[in-house]
Image (cartoon, rainbow, N blue to C red; front, side, top):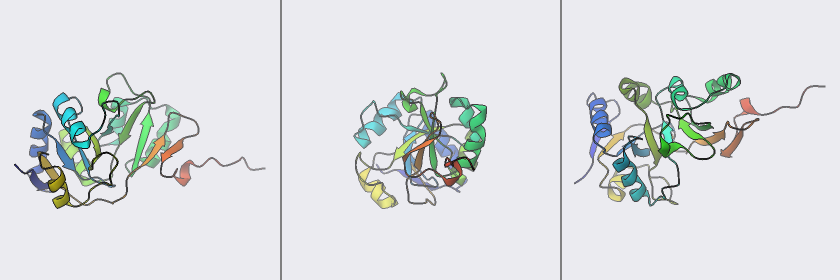
Length: 202
C-alpha cells in the first residue's frame, strides 16, 4: 500500500490531515526548511511508528510544529523579555527551545525544555491553522542520513507512511536557537544577527 499524496493547496488536504491525526496515521508535510514526518503528538501509535521508521530511540524528543506564534504560548513559558525575540524568529526557519509548560506533549520535551517550530509556510498558516492543532515532526530520513526531498524517494524509503502533503520547501534544515539561556545561543546553525550580543558603546 502506498501513501495518499495531496498538494498543500488541495481543498481535500485539511480533511485528510485531520483524519490522519484523529486515527493515529503518520504523514509527511512541507515546511519552509525541509519536509517533516510526524503526526498527532499525543498518539502513541503514531509516535512509535515514526520512531521505528527513523530507527530513532525513545529518548530523542521530536520538534513540535505549530501554526502560529500565539500557539507557542500554549506549550512553552515565554518571558516578557523574550517576546520581541520570538517575534523576530517566528514564523521562520528556526527551531526555538523554551521551558515547557505542563500541558506540552511529552514527545517534544527534554531536560532542556521543548523544541518548537512555526514554519513560514501556507501548509501551517492555512491548513494547520484551520485545524488548530500541532504536529510532532522530524526530518524525513533514517537516523544519521541526509533528509529526503523528492517525493518518489520518500515513497521508496517510507512506503508505510499514510499521507504525503507536497509543497515547496527551502531545502536546508532549521537553525536551532536555545532561548532557555541568556544570551540565546545557536545549537545548530547560526544565531541571527538581530540576536548577536554587542558590547556597550564607549
